[in-house]
Amino acid sequence: MADKTKQEKPGYKTIPMGGMIPRAGSSEDYKTGDWRVKKPVRDDEKCIDCLFCYIFCPERAVSVTEDGKIGKINLDYCKGCGICAEECPKDAIKMELE
Amino acid sequence: MGKKVALIGTAAMATAMRQINPDVVSAFPITPQTAIVQDFASYVHNGMVDTEFITVESEHSAMSACVGAASAGARVMTATSSAGLALMWEILSIASGLRLPVVMTNVNRALSAPINIHCDHSDSMGARDAGWIQFYSENSQEGYDNLIKSIRIAEDENVRLPAMVMIDGFITGHSTEILEILEDSQVKGFLKENKAPYSVLDIENPSTFGPLQLTDYYFETKKQEADAMVASMDTIKAVCKEYRELSGREQPLVDTYMIDDAEMAIMVLSSTAGTTRSVVRELRKDGIKAGLIKPRLFRPFPKEEIIESTKNLKALAVLDRSDSFSGQGGPLYSEVRSALYDLDTKPVITNYVYGLGGRDTTIDQIKKAFNDLSSVAKTGKAENLVNYLGVRE
View (cartoon, each protein chain N blue to C red):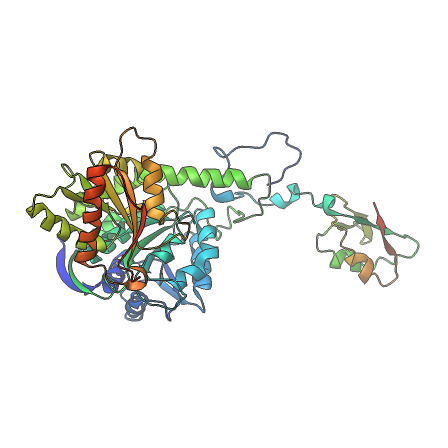
């Protein structure tokens, strides 16, 4: 699918039949971050590491550190839906224009 | 070898399905469904087939279930008619777009409105651009034979496209005819293993079926499908040759009758070819050089065979049992005309839309078309290119 790192895409003579993707995990190649209008910005002072944003994020763009705390939000995949900001019980996430 | 049986057309199709013994059949069991599915349900109930039979609430769901089962690599069949095919329409192009070899019988019947249950070809002609292989059958024998061949063609690794086999509603579907059926073991021996290149149930090799393809890949996938349809002609010819050797039945993709020295001919699909053949026979007794051309295959379009069959004609009438409401005639006409356009010498080609909503197409009507044709052949000119046969003014 949309592997944007490649300039030259394969043509109809070589692509798999019927638009198949014959391998697993290909959604990693599809960067949905460019759909975003607003990005989530977290206030570390307010965040209590409850992991709500991690649980609710439909893209799994919120990561968790090894010691169980909220890590970075991966903007390659964050579509800017704002669910994390809506669900945050401490109002620690604000959606800001890019 | 095979044996002769007397069956109504739908029972002939259900018999072929029993002998094919598909893995999955999904069908909507109520009107406009035909007795094909009723007969097949009894085979399932009586343990005569190994088929998983899925009844659903609509034809849209029936074809959707077929797509799902075919994605798993199953041999999948269904049957429909008329408005049922129309309701499948969205999923038809999903089956072909995903390159799934679903095989279906369609008993040709008119589309509403006005509401009507009788034969015409407006249902399957409405699906002519859906990426399905299309066979049209003159009688039960051809329907039976076309259905068995279609499994081999659709599942071939160089094709992987769905196929639909048409028989005329009521005229063939509800009439008892004698046909010769193969032994069950012969059908089993003729069919090959359905080797799906991918299966949605293959957890060792996970794959995605039907992903989003926007401006980046959709066009390439469709071009690949278009090429597969063109290339399927080689497989169709090879499978038909093998089937001929098995059955002893000569069934060219474009059949002809008395065409070699004919000056004029009628080209027509399905059961009306029988009426036309008897008219040709009668006209020949009076020394009139009339002929018949009957394509069995409409998708892919058998262009070379059509050109070959028409090369000596002065006048050709193409009969269409559906209208395109374009003022340019029916679908068979416009494609035949297009196929012959580039030739230096070609017949004058006229069109007759006939038999809509099951209107009887009589010997007298066919004679009238030949009568028109004889003056076209003499003058080299047609008064009207597009005509309607057997309609009241």
